[in-house]
Image 1 (tube, rainbow, N blue to C red):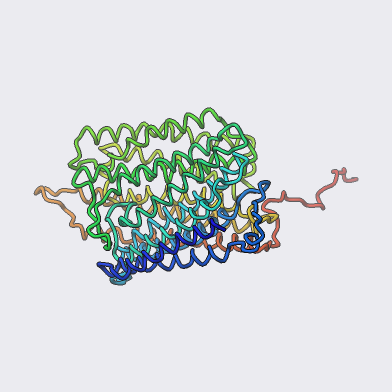
Image 2: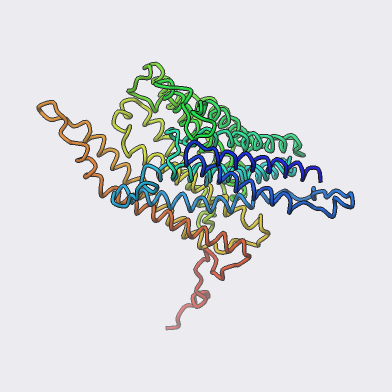
Length: 549
């Protein structure tokens, strides 16, 4: 009972502070954000009071969780949140793709491209990807450690606290609240809240590893731990800022000029390296062997992959600043380490693909495994393309063009998206105790619409990027540029339409997934034929008999 009262007291204090901050806010946007916090505090306070077991407290008994079962409630919530935020992020992505093709679709001021674009990137990376990482890490660490989650109350705070972070960040973008930093848009007070949530996440994960029953720490947990620790370090350094007012939504970054740019891209590239790579590699190392029913091809290679990746990735950020005021030696350092990253990255790709030794025939009948294999293939392609684009001579053509957009989305949609879809399809029937998914054939529809959508998206952006790069560097006989910026925009219009079409296909696949997972949760099963059945003709199934003359 004392725990319930303490928790309720904390949320009551948060509510009072949020109400006072709303009333004294220096700007309307900050007032709206604090009102949102107040609403969240009311909900948390009500839940704390309603969920308390008053009868047990009166009788002096203590309710003990069943230690023979895993603590899967936060994982179930995470699955639902991943699907929800994925749909939201993909939809906003389609909208801004259409806005680039037809600028009249920009709705001022709240729904223009400038405000929707960071909403899209944050929704896909931090809302969709972040919830997938939370859910899968809690699932994997329990199964590989053979232990329930440590600090179950804190685990629930991590989930709901992270949802509040997403809501504050997303509504802030629409209100025009931003630091203007790629992948680090939220302002100072949202960053502080995320820091609290992230420390709690680290405590739950490490606490579960410490209380494990298995003596060995499986490699997926090393990847998850590196993702949690490194993202915390990146977040703290890059978001150092001085608020203009403690009751306002604006701040001044601690770093400025070329130092600020270097810190930002040290953060930005390693957010890709540890949030979008290390965390999702942890998924690959657990769920691909599980789905293929084969052990990891080489556990020794997975360890080499881990240590090489985390050591090299942290140095690669300067390749985003080629031909800028950053010292040339720092640019070259970033380029060299980026090229070196190719080797451990492909070591991981090879390890994932070779795990299917003896199970390749399953690709014909198992669309979930097909999603995993395709994601690994996109991981390999992206981790070749990235180092190649970091080379200065290539970068002089590709940088600031849509080639970079194609590269990012082939990795995000192909690698991160596909492995997340496979994870969701794997865990959903197990978490809700269902015999199987609602429809395996619907997974197949999802696979093909998503794959074709990625091809349209990435190919159109590759063509658009090379076109841009060549048109921007074309000089006439008089030494002046041949093409104006408007000329390049006009030339790209067909590619922007194809990009939007690819995004529509990818969103369609996500709709199939949403229906499939929701019907699975409800316990429905679609009556459908197996994915693969060998052809059989009974009329031809007989011995050949010589015909009498």
